[in-house]
Image (cartoon, helix red, strand yellow):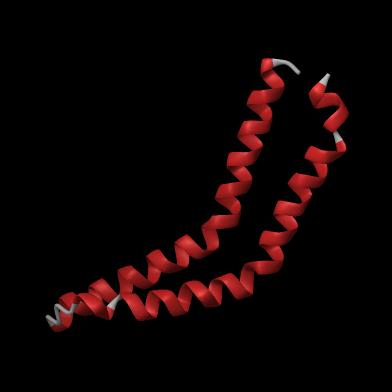
Length: 89
């Protein structure tokens, strides 16, 4: 296994990690931004107001994007295990 192969596998692993985590992180960030704007406009400064909607939206995003996340992860693992002989030699 060469250094280029290790770097390539590392890059692909980071890309898959970002692609799998992005739907939940982005949905939580958007809801947090919307709630922050709402709190600024109404001058409600309750810290706990953001937690419940974020948890609900992140859970919904997880359920909706689960097939995409599983497909992306399984594609990467299939390629990784499929080329296992090339990687160890």
